[in-house]
Length: 353
Image (cartoon, rainbow, N blue to C red; front, side):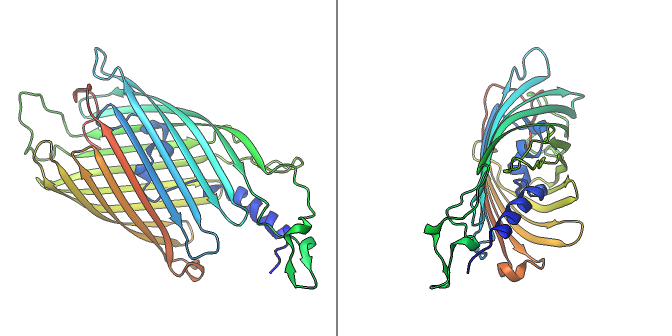
């Protein structure tokens, strides 16, 4: 069936105007820099690397594919002054639709963390980046390609339309802050292996993205500014016993009229607490919704080794009206994170995450 170019262009413009559809993940705390620049350097260790892959709506004609990777590092941590600087990089790639509408960006992050007390640390951060957005006309079809003899589209006839551009470059900027509340730290002379509540922590913060509202239009005579996106979040862990924790998290994102809410609750079991061989497993359930309806439920499973390597997987099951097109299938998501631990003492550097 021939697709009319006006509908194709409408789809492209909708992809741009629905800017609430920024790259986002169900496991939002696996992409911390994208949630808020204030989460740069908020981890136990001195260098952190991670990546997340998402495949969404495999039953629709052209599914969505999203990949994100990041790395951040602390500097002057634990030296004479209790505060420390951190820096990081993040890369995102997203592709969707017959037009292969693609978004790629690279952002640089910087933050400063200042202890407010032995139980509280405040981090403020900012990011600057560059991105590229484009689409491919090879698989697009227009009325001018209609062949009356075959009743099909003839790609060799050309679209019969002139695009000002099929790709654009833009610059981006954002800010954010994070407040870490945590259990009081212990000295090296005091054993804390079995102390109740030693793992308790809570992160609260926000991120404000696209401060410069870059122009995302492919047309010379039209300007489509990317609206600012505000994200508020919380991520906490409550130690229930020596070998069991309760983990809770939420994220709310607002971008013009678009709203998205994600909540998650899970139980973490410490199956091995022997030093150097620590192993935990967490099972969780989460919910994605907006102002009008519940979009999807998702189960999640997470494994963590030695407080350094963490691997998690989740699967969104669509429960909104879109389930008719997706067959209730949603999105599979896989996240990996690794922390290099050395140099930084835990007196001022964050002990748990």
